[in-house]
Amino acid sequence: MDQESVVYGCIKDINVDPVSQEGQTRQRTNFSAMKTLPTKDDFPIISRDMFAVTDNDETTGSTEVMHFGACYKSIEYEWERWLAEFESLLRQMYWVSATVHLETELSGTHTFTWESQRMYHEPFSGDMAVRCEWSQETLAC
Image (cartoon, rainbow, N blue to C red; front, side, top):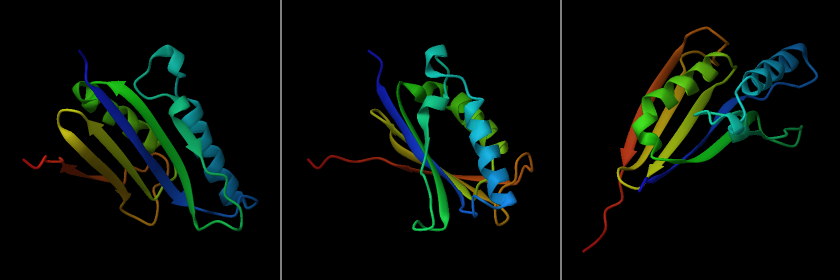
């Protein structure tokens, strides 16, 4: 029997006035990158159906949040491929940081964090850095 894996997280960008040229460019670019992903009906490893974007207005904070999540069967066996596809998406977007949580039944929880080496990442600029943390719950005897 395959083990269940849950992947969830968010991509954060600075919240620029959506009426400004910069704000429109950032939103259009990020939405376009997510819309180019296949639908879940095609059984891709990452799909556009996983993603949702918070509707920001002037009452919200200064961070634009694009969140995602999906449940898989044993995705950890395809994790290198998942990461490669996620990083390919990130390369096409504006963002400040991205966090992915991988919860597995057998090997605990892994947290992956990407941070721009500048104030924010620009599409296709290549300035990405990733950090991975692993934690596993232990049961008290």
